Length: 181
Image 1 (cartoon, one colour):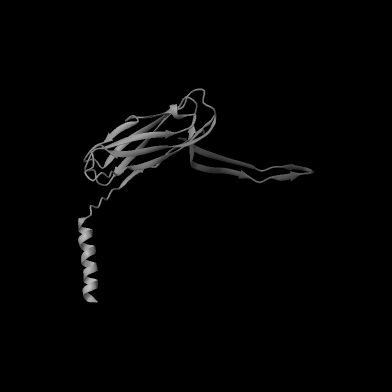
Image 2: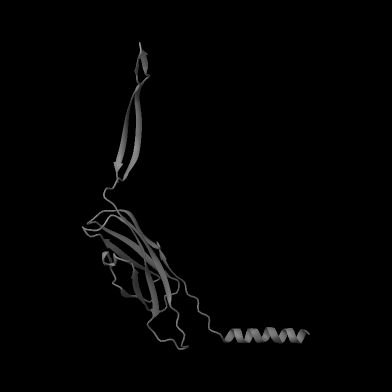
């Protein structure tokens, strides 16, 4: 019985030693292009960092847009096909959105896919394609109200009063300090 168990364990270790194991990590940060305050004629750039764990070879990368009706608004500083160089575990990608002057107000959603593939031929005949998805959530608006309330001061308060049948409301005097962002 012990010989049978040792034989099975030995066989598994032997065949396990003959296999080639590939570990690959790939990701992006942030995984979105998001802006809720775009105006007609405006421009917005989002930096996406492509991260891979084992940059032992050059990888070809390709962007595919799924942005129905507004794909022409987007461009990448690297184009739609580029190389992730050997030895670099982080590669920056700048996605720019240029909203046309005649764009309709409203929300625009979609995604951009990054697909990578090896530029070298694999000796085993097996290649590993890695990819990621950038979610796109944009909103074109007419007016933008972006501010921060920095301070509110209450300087005077007067209680309301009644004289005969008339009611006089109270008064409050205050100051608010805003920062236009």
